[in-house]
Structure formats: structure tokens, C-alpha cells
Length: 93
Image 1: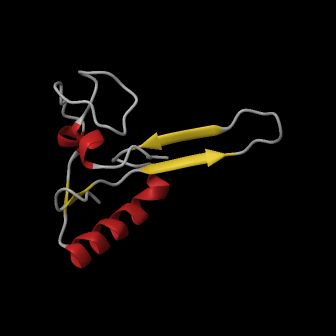
Image 2: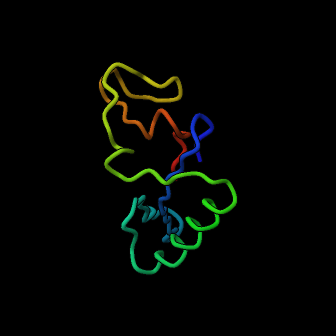
Image 3: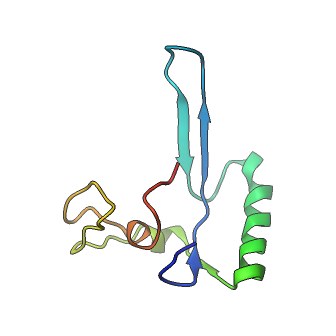
């Protein structure tokens, strides 16, 4: 949920430890989520909307370029920011 506007975004992240010294298997996905996450997605969306009255932002809005801004919490240069970087924390994991 954003602290700047009454909007929210949902995503799923997954990390699997494969053992000591082995690389981790990890991914981050935005809707449509994998089938095993869709029931959770529906339930979370309903809870956020009924509790806070926030509106869910679709992916095309979340990933809109914001070319003239570099969020203070970001580690990328001018022209690389997207609306999601401006409205939400960079800690999507």
C-alpha cells in the first residue's frame, strides 16, 4: 500500500534455499500470479479494499516510466524510474 495515495499493488515473491553453498532459486512476479497464488491474491485484494478502501493499480500503470525523477531510495539513474518506484518502497522481495 502506498503512503502517498490510496492505492496498492500485489505481487508474489518466492525464495528457495537449495543448501549450503548452492545458489538460491528466487523470483518476483506481478499479476497474473501463478495458479497456486491466485486464491491468496483474491483474498488479499478483498481485505485491502474492504479495510482501507484503496484501489489496486494495474500493471500498465505501475510500470509507467517517470523519466524526470530518481526516487531517493533507488539505485538507478535518471530515466529508469517507474511509477511503482515512486509510490512504494523499493524492498520488493
